[in-house]
Amino acid sequence: AQSVTQLGSHVSVSEGALVLLRCNYSSSVPPYLFWYVQYPNQGLQLLLKYTTGATLVKGINGFEAEFKKSETSFHLTKPSAHMSDAAEYFCAVSDGNTGKLIFGQGTTLQVKP
Amino acid sequence: EADIYQTPRYLVIGTGKKITLECSQTMGHDKMYWYQQDPGMELHLIHYSYGVNSTEKGDLSSESTVSRIRTEHFPLTLESARPSHTSQYLCASSEVGSRYTFGSGTRLTVV
Image (tube, rainbow over all chains, first blue to last red; front, side, top):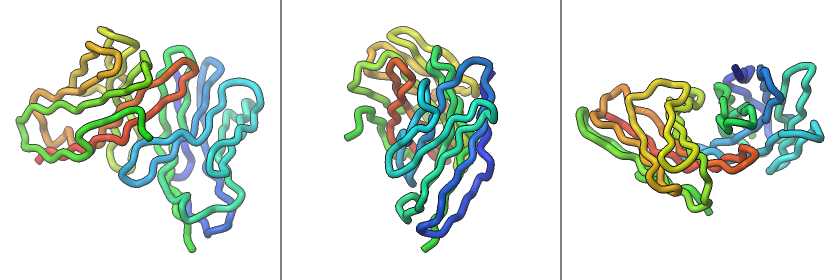
């Protein structure tokens, strides 16, 4: 069985500060890992994904995430937060076979001026 | 521009009514999914389909039903809506390699 845990349901940073959203997963098979962003009253948008290959994955809007197998983590980072980054962020894992995604609880990112 | 469409975006309906949430995609994806999301909570898979005439229950038990008569269409039906069904419902489709495309969601309120 697969599961995802996002540490911190609410993260607040100042504009220009580093963004770090934590995600740990468990999977009995090599995982596919994803980060999605959800702006208010909108659907989900893919930020980035890891399937195989390079463990540092770059996504849209300046976000990146690093797959660390030894730590079973896939934390999302951005060097400098922007006001427009305020949203809900979801980490998800898939086994790549069934295509089913298991989502974490979500982390609300607040960006203060 | 969205390639997966959900209607309606918002729905307020009385208890006991039958409702159908529409989901259509234009990408020819075989796999389609319905997720339920309560405010501030994680997404839960309630139904999925791997192709025409294929439907399966997801990880979260739901009183809703789905059908997949055409590749592009994956409607969700509640025969008798109740306040406990109040939630956001997100439809998604995917291609090989698990890249998902999500609709904008339907926010359902049952009064």
